Image (cartoon, rainbow, N blue to C red; front, side):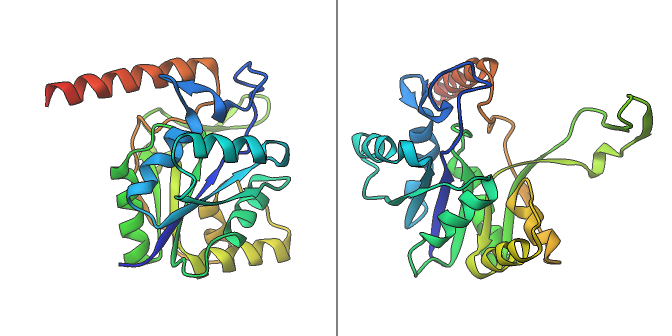
Length: 234
């Protein structure tokens, strides 16, 4: 089995959440979102790197220690000006024995071990594994004025989630290629696509939501309540 580490991005903001604090510090059923994001990896990976804003690096370090994660989190690295730059900083902070990296958004605080394991298994076998869910809505492509150009075949469409798992040499080479060409992507899988490397999807989870708005926070609380009820029935 290959040695895996997680890179977890915690450099968001609370602007769309309507909060003055970084949304990943907000509690979900009393536990900060970033703690819920990191903890499921601790039983699977050899360690983690958490990426934080420079002004929050000390707060992040103290919070992780408070919840007993300081031994698992090897480094709290400082983020960059873009998500891509922050991931690159996280990759640069990985221990030398890292063979696979799982890149995860700290705002996806409802991640489960099952989703992580599927992405990891795909990365071991095929080089990468990207959590995704099928698109259920009808999706149309339109011009700026709203005029519809076409209806896309939703059977071929997937919404990307995290974690996105990669064999370390592949994702590092893809980041180097993007930096050289000045290419900026919205997720790491797109960097592999840009470099001409294959990307493989794995089953995500519709409960693996990204906390962005107050409604997401309420939805997250409801999901946790539902999970507790399901566990009690087993």
